Length: 281
Image (cartoon, rainbow, N blue to C red; front, side, top):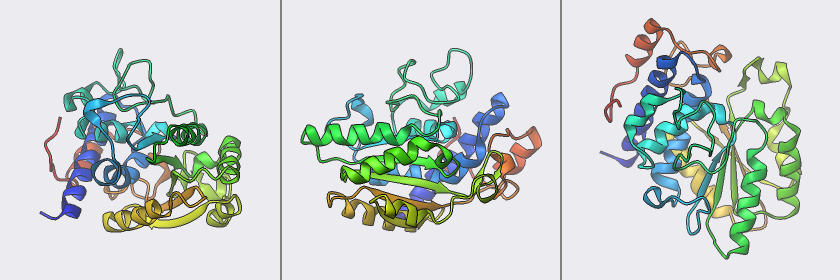
C-alpha cells in the first residue's frame, strides 16, 4: 500500500468518525470538519514532528498545531485519537456531559493534544505567533502550524496578528486557511467578500502558497514547499482550496452543513460513501 493510499484511508475513517460522532448527539459541525480532514490527517500522519506519547503544553523539541476554527473539533479529536493521543473509544463521548471532548476544544479537561481553548474565532493566530516566538527564544527550530476558516477572516484580530507576524518576521510559522468559500450564513463573497486573499496576505509580508486541500498528493507537495520556505524572514500562508462536506455527495459545497447534524437516513447514506478503513470506534 502506498503512503498516499494509507493517508487517504486514514482520512476516510476520520470522516466516518466525524459523521458518527455528530449524529450521535445531534450536534456539531460536519461541513468544515469533512473538508479539512485530508489536510490535518497529513499533518499528524506525515508532516509534523510530534510526540503523542509524551505530550506537554510547552511542546519543546517538536512541531505544534493550533486549530483556530475550533468548531471543527470532531475532525481534530478523531485525528488526535487515531494518532495515539488518547483512546479511540473516547470518541464516543463527544459533546456529552462531563466529556473531555467538548464541542469546542478546551484545556480544562486535560485532553492530550489540546494546548489552548479554541472556537472563539480569530484568536488562534495570535496564540500561534506567541508560541513560535517562544520557540525562537528557546533555540527550538521546530514549526508552529495553524488552521483557520475563511469565514474566520471576518475577525479583526486575525489581521492584527497577520500584520504583527509579517512585521516581526515570525518565520517558523505556517498558517493555513480552509478556503471553501462557505460560512455559516452563506457564501463568503456574499456575507463579507474576502477579495484577493493571496494579495492581502502578501501585502502583510507573508509568503503565500496555494494548494488543493482535498488532494493528498498536492497537500504533501505544497506543505513540503512551505516547510522549505520557513526560516527565511517571512511567515508562511497556505491558501487551501477545499469543498465543505467533502466526501459526501449531498453535503459537498453546501453551507447548510456548516453546523447541521445528519439524520439517521442521511448518516446511513453518507457512511455508504465512506468505506470503513481502520475500524469504527
